[in-house]
Length: 142
Image (cartoon, rainbow, N blue to C red; front, side, top):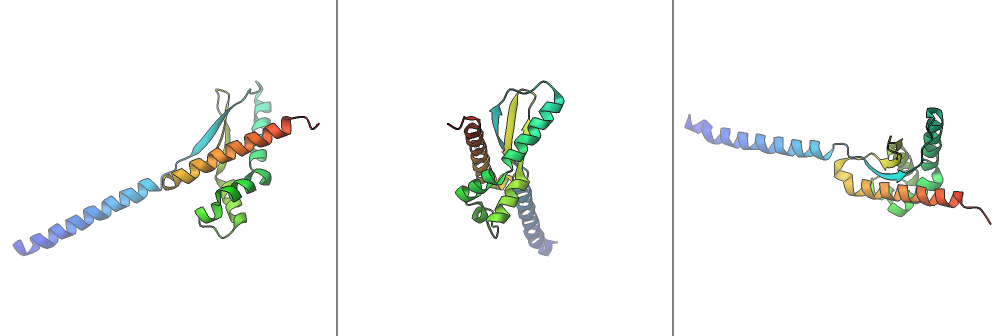
């Protein structure tokens, strides 16, 4: 009986260590979306709301917004992707645009918990770039 006690304790400790490592990995790979809320005056009609959301989604996912964000943040290197076009495609896949009932536009990014810092920085940069582009387009060209 005593000769099995030490190997049983060692096996139990290794099992606990493996379980703790597995739980940590699972927690680090949980989804963690980040977004920027922009106050907007929303139309009352549902059809106009859907059209506005589709238009804003197309603007946010356009190359004139995504490519500068990828270059400024060096996302190809941060996400271990082969090139800039792969990083733009990944950013386009992760980005989202939603309207809240309270009158806020949410522009954000889906990411993992282990990449929280990068995801939050990119979401802020994406929102800032969208706002700068929207302000530039709304000004008269004199």
